[in-house]
Length: 342
Image 1 (cartoon, rainbow, N blue to C red):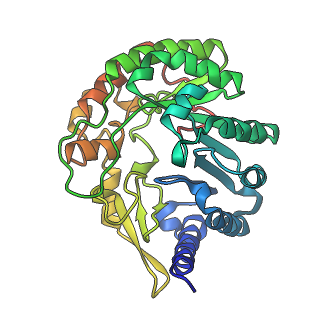
Image 2: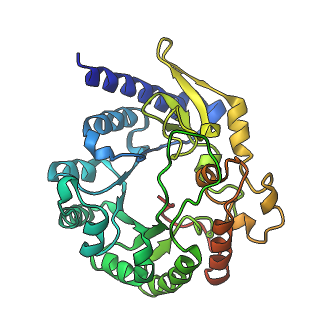
């Protein structure tokens, strides 16, 4: 058995144990009624369809027709993969940045190959097969003023749900967290043009959001599911509360709350770490206590705040300013949205 085969076997055993705990065995930790698996993270899930298929098959054995499968992907995959996704995945979020000239500039394939045509082919196929497809766009500095153009493009290919995020610095695994400038974008300018695009989207029956507005639908003390925390299994055998903490070697170690013991086929959870993660909410973050919109923010992205400031309960002031600006111009508390932030 090759090293790759051994690693795949180990990952599958860990994934199955994680699903056993999440769906059935550890209701004391994760509660009841869980029915969702999600493929995403650093790297592209569809490059390891063998693992994706095996995990999905096992989850179906546990949850049956109640299983809900979400896939976050770059959309650059074969027709055979598209056919499997159409039969087995409920919701697909495509990382696509806009019209051909933006997409091919931002996300070329290996060797510089253009990706846009293949991605649009897959989007249209999945839509035809009845799969929900949303877009997750990354906005570069040169594209801040093009948000309406980007939305119109997505509308032209049948996508009505779009989340757009300003580009961020990659999370590095070496070194310690310290104060960092984590986005090269002028967030005030981004927010101003986002509001214009939001209104344009609303007129066209589209949903346009970003990670600043993710809790504008209804009050919540937490920024996202990472702070509940929901289990996210890393490739090297750890349980993380945040997708930015994608390895046991992460500098965002506060978010690691479990570790797999392969000898015992058991995941050891750390209740004290989980309790600490739950403190990442507006009741404990000093800067949030007197903020008028704290219940529609939750303190902002926990992983990026920790990465930027080195403080688990820290906040990114630029994020706060952008969120407050958006809160003045975008309706809040109108009810839970149908499709959550990807």
